Length: 88
Image 1 (cartoon, rainbow, N blue to C red):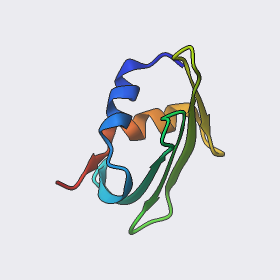
Image 2 (image 1 turned 90 degrees about the vertical axis):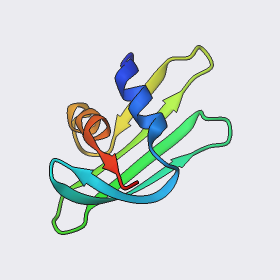
Image 3 (image 1 turned 120 degrees about the vertical axis):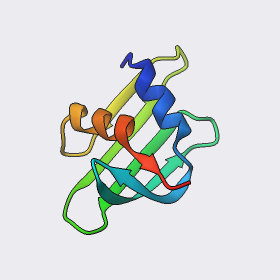
Image 4 (image 1 turned 60 degrees about the vertical axis):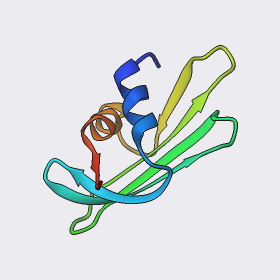
């Protein structure tokens, strides 16, 4: 996966649990990163609805990344990460 904007946006997300907004809706988001940065995950749940976003992101030694969405499209995952705004 070669998507520099996604990488930058994902790195800005706080680790652990946070709340914020995406497309005018409130979400609770949990981001987990391994100590070596090679295994990453995100699980987001809409707080007043039924929508979820979930994926694993694996980084290999060559620097490339493999995005593995959980039962949803890569496009949905990418759009969420690019558009999600955590609370300050």
